[in-house]
Image: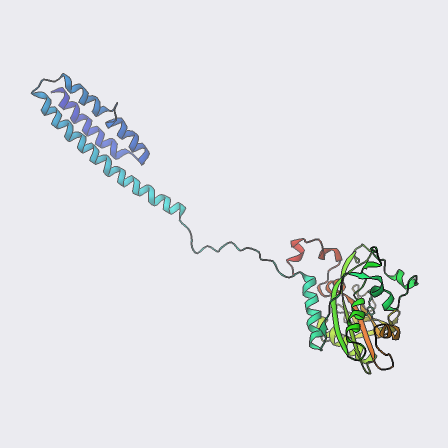
Length: 342
Ligand code: DAH
C-alpha cells in the first residue's frame, strides 16, 4: 500500500526535522507545513478518498497515529525551545540589584546665603539680633535721616535708582539703623545686624547693580571705639581665621563720626604683602564708625545720654575673599559648574 509507505516516510522525516528546529517561530512554521490545511499530512489524508473501503480504515488508523505522534513531538519540542528562549531572555533582561542607583542632584544653599548665615551666627553669639527693612525705601531713611541732606555732595557717593514720590531703591542697609533706633528710642539699648539687598547704578567685575550688605548697630550708654574694634576683631577672626588682625583707617561717612575703613590682615601672605592684598598686607572689608550725634537725635536718642557704633559690610566682597572668587558676577549668573563647588 503506497499511502502507508508514504506515511512512514513522512513520520520518520518529520520527527527528524522537528528535532532540527532551533526556535519556536521556525517550529511553528514547520507545524503548519506538516499539519496545516495545505500541509503534507493533510494532503495524504485527502488522497485517502481514492482508497478501497477495506484499505481506508487501515490507512486512516495509521494516519491518526502518525498525526498524534507528530503533534506530541511538536509539543515537546515547543516546550523545550520555549524554556530555552525564556532563560536566554531572563539572562539578558535581568536587573542587577547590586548596581548603584541614579543619584539626583538635590541642590543646596547659595554661597552668598551661606556667608550671610555665617556672618549672622557670629553676631547672634555676641547678643545681636536680626532686623529687617524695606528694599524700596524713602529718600528720608536712605539719606536725610542718615545725615545726608538733599543736594549734599555725599549723595554722589552712591549712584541711586530713584523712583517717584520720594522713593528710592535703597543704596545701603544703613536706613535699617534709623528704623531700629526709632523703635527703641529714647532710652532702650540696641544691638542689631541687618542683612539685605541694596541697589546702585554700578556694573563691572567688582560691582553689581544689586548686591548685599550686612549692617550692624549697637546703641547704649558709654559705647566707644574700643567696643567697635573688639567686636569687629572677633568677627574677623571667626570669619577668616584666629590669626587675623584688623586695623581702622580714618575715613568719612556722613552718618558716623569718627568714621573708619576697616581692613583685615591678608590671609594669603599673613600680612607680608602679596598679589591678593596688592602688596599692602591688608584687605578692606567694611566701613564703620561711631554713630553721628545728628543721626542719634534724628532717631529720638539724646547724644548726651547714649552713644553707639555702626558698621556696614558687603556680603559679596566677604564671599570673594573667603572663597577666593575673582569676578563678583559668578555669584549671580546661576552657572551650576560654579555653584556646585560650594
Ligand atoms: N552704608 C555704607 C556704604 O554702603 C557702609 C557703612 C559705613 C555702614 C559706615 C555703616 C558705617 O554703618 O558706620 O558704603
